[in-house]
Length: 113
Ligand code: FES
Image (cartoon, rainbow, N blue to C red; front, top):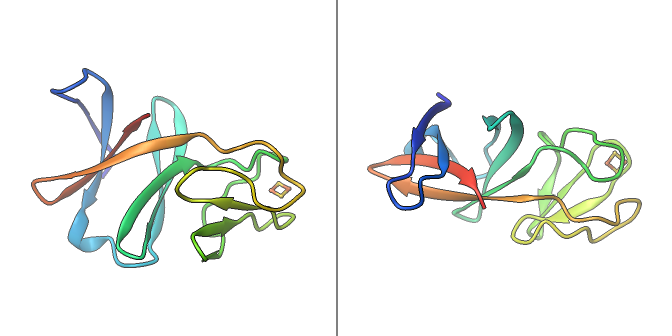
């Protein structure tokens, strides 16, 4: 997993996460995109990708509880919207950077927004 390729559309760097079929509902993983750890989550059938760092104290978001479209930082409990990266509870006040996802030929890819 985690191979790199150039997007034919934009020339951006995309990273192959793996077969979509192996990415079950609720599954999370982290992949490296241009040296940045990016969290990938499947929630209610959709894929979301956001920087794997809480904007409060930089704690990894990987493994945090996901409910109501939000992921909870396990360190101090801040919640971020998967779709927008916006914080919805303190102590975080800044949004988490988002990344793009796409499925192509059965594989899930992540790339810079
Ligand atoms: S590091 Fe995430 S809430 Fe503090």
